Length: 27
Image 1 (cartoon, rainbow, N blue to C red):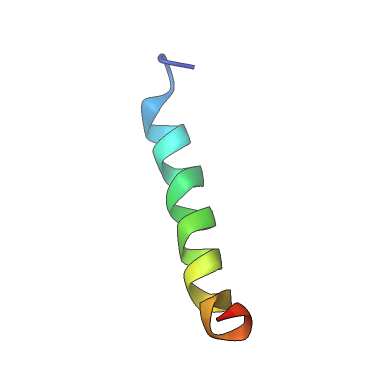
Image 2 (cartoon, rainbow, N blue to C red):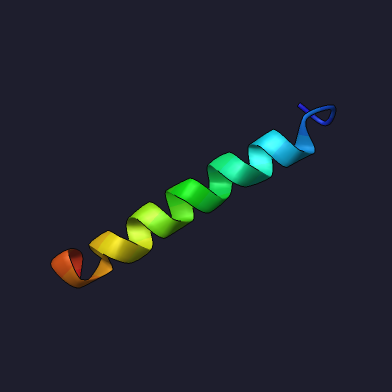
């Protein structure tokens, strides 16, 4: 996976943003 750091970073950012949007619902 080290050969696609940009893709992994993009996916992580999307997941992070997704949970940030759901944050008020769970907390």
